[in-house]
Length: 273
Ligand SMILES: [Zn+2]
Image (cartoon, rainbow, N blue to C red; front, top):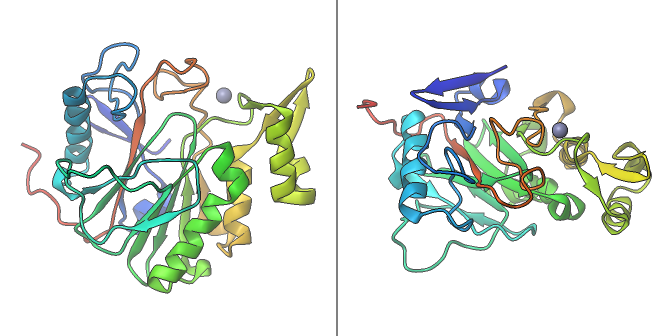
């Protein structure tokens, strides 16, 4: 498993992005200073945890990747398919709230994209030709809306990216074994995927389960990203509560783990001291 460690922190990395030198990590909940029920490296500031602890945890994650926390750009996730281009970092002291978007992208090496997750799917994109990145968040709504495909389109629009040249990665999120959905969700997936929906929805003991990993992979492929350039972590958050926060498995009383993404030439801190 491609996990890396920094002090007590442990984070997942993708082989395709690492090969390209993309600075990134999907951080497990290990390490960090938050108490139960957010125990560990909670980066979610809207789940009842103390703001100071959350900022401390975020700082640790940036330090683990050798990045400056002042480089961060985050978004207010709303389960949509709108994209925002990060031209510059967004200071944590900014008076206005973060932009409402489930896709953030940048071509600025001074920017580190950050998003928070607890079951929803992290989608990471890298364009080695235009030196640009995107980070997206897709739960069932975003999966029905095609947020992953919208991220590819946003890169094309903003940077002239060609989908066939992108590298894509699908991070730890709730797996098909654990993601039970209602008939209304299944109906929206059927609308979005047509005949392919059968491969995404399975019935077991009268319940319906949705495969978010394959669904998002299909969105990326439909948008033109070659299958062999898409890497899927295939790690289920609900199966591994020692590593991940799971909104579903912990019945909403939990934290958020962070995904960080920066360009290969992002300025690095000279020391971990
Ligand atoms: Zn599972």
